[in-house]
Amino acid sequence: MKILLINNDGGGFADYVDVAEGTTVRQCFEKHIGHGSPANYLIRVNRQPVPSDQQLQEGDRISITPTKIEGAVLQS
Amino acid sequence: MATYNRLAWQAASAIYDLLNDTPTATIKLPQKFWQEAEQLLGKINKADQRGWGSAGRQLRVRYLQSVERLSNRISDSLNNLKTEMQQPFLTPLESIYKDLCSLTDEFDDVEISLFDKQIRCRTPDIELEGIQLGRFSIALNWAQINEIQPYQVEALDPNPAVSSDSTTHSHIQDGRLCEGDGKTAIQAALQQGRMSDFFLLVRQILGTYNPESPYVSLERWFGANCKDCDYLMASGDNHYCELCDSEVCSECSCSCQKCYETVCNQCSQTCEDCLDSFCPGCIAPCSTCEKSYCKECLKDETCQQCLEKQAESEEESCPEIPETENCPADDSNLAVHAVCVGEVVVSA
Image (cartoon, rainbow over all chains, first blue to last red; front, side, top):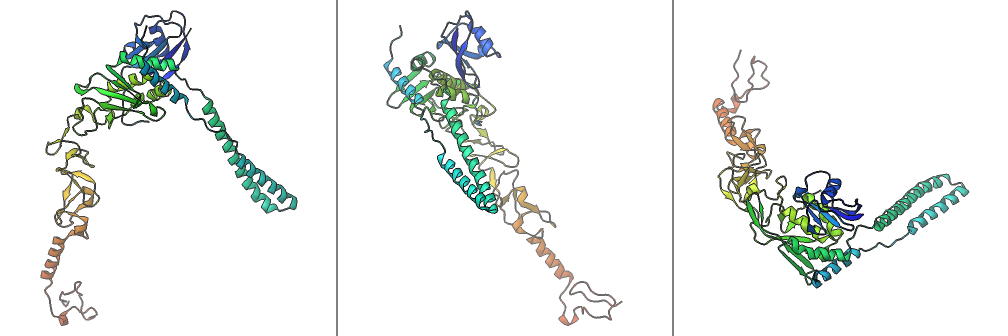
């Protein structure tokens, strides 16, 4: 099934990805983020906070945003 | 069932239209350059037919340059077309609307103004490293959504750094957020119309302190003490010594009168003669008395006082004598010659 994955870590990737039926939020995080702990991210499904064991549904919109993003004076 | 929010829908529609209204460049073939190359080719053929070897060679050089220009134009045109045809991910209108409606779940206060073309979200109190910076208003001006940083971040309960009134957050100056690691993600969120992601990203930056690159570090939020006199310096009163890098107040710093480098009192030196302050590079010791003088007050590495003293001592050791008794330079009868004007010649 397809879901919209928004990864705001780094470059801000947003695209539709295929996930298996029954994939939980945690499994999706581990597959697509790979590093770090889910506790360090704001994870929203359809713009709402969800438990990590919630199963994703077809067409869901999952956004993953780091809780800490460092600002800086010098920008590239 | 969620209630319909007319204001949010109108704002979402305006944002959607703006994001879809990216101007497309007119596609043109580089005909001018093609014609130029064609004309040169005709001239080359003519020169070859008439046996004008030199002209033919010169024309071939010009033809080569002309074809290169033509080739570059075609490449540019091709690249522009490819870029234009790359369809970026764009959030549907309904999704932009849902984003705007969901902002109230994330922020204490959300305001949409069709008149100002702004969406304003208020953050909760922000505290970094124990310093209360208060609430902030993130105001997105959607009319400028296709431009760079179309938003302002305003402190609602400003507690600016003592050294800079315009720095209300370690990463905000004059309402402008230095996005740092969030820059690309913010740009992507805005370009793709992901409004909730944009506001969340800004909020997360506001809640994070990067000690590596702040406008004013939180350690110095309440000001810095002058290294020399310990005075608590306010905005614009601090200076950095260009030699030892210490931060000093206006009273404890000076500008070198020669090279205008800023130096602290510890590093500056005063000329013994003119009494002006100089950096160590623009001051030198007198070769005789070793006191410090600026280069203007030294002559042949000697200060005026020492020069005068030398002149006096020379006068004392060589008393003035009548001109007739002066050393005759060409007196071959004398075995020893005086080496100094005014000294008396002693016979061997």
